[in-house]
Image: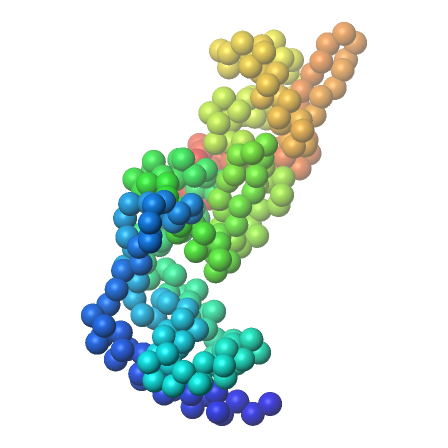
Length: 256
């Protein structure tokens, strides 16, 4: 398929759009009225002209110049002609040109499994703004999420971890669960009473943690006579050991 007509049109628009943006003096995207979910409720976010989807810019330009070309341009977008020019690649690179978004991405990358509340507290960003930027990073395929019993953790989207490893990292965000896993790594076959004594929490609290860990395949339960013993599953034991080693040596691979 010959693409030179689309290439010529794109070059013309690349020269025209910055001039239009400069003439307009820039703009800021704000809520029309009230709070819109997953959008910053308080702080408006400045948007440069190259961060706006091309179709929006082109249609705005044509509305003032040649409205009859709007149909042609929309057909080109429907046929994905613009993907040939690497728009998604450019937009993905531009996503990290935003200082706040870069800080979020870097923090998620070094703290895999981090939850929204912790991320907001660590970076000092309100949750509305944080959700907006996380949505953008997910849109460009830069971060991914995993959910354990309604608790969502964020990860760099590089498939570094298996499904089980992602669950371990999310559980590790709870200090008591993290210590429980470390005890089972050190003393496999511990009973609920032994775990409660070493953790300094009630046996019912230990049961709550163990129930969640068993449901995710991280902990195994075995009955020996009238006693119940707990240990780490084969796959989780190695990864828990790696996480514990990172903590002891101050490594940032797993963010602990």
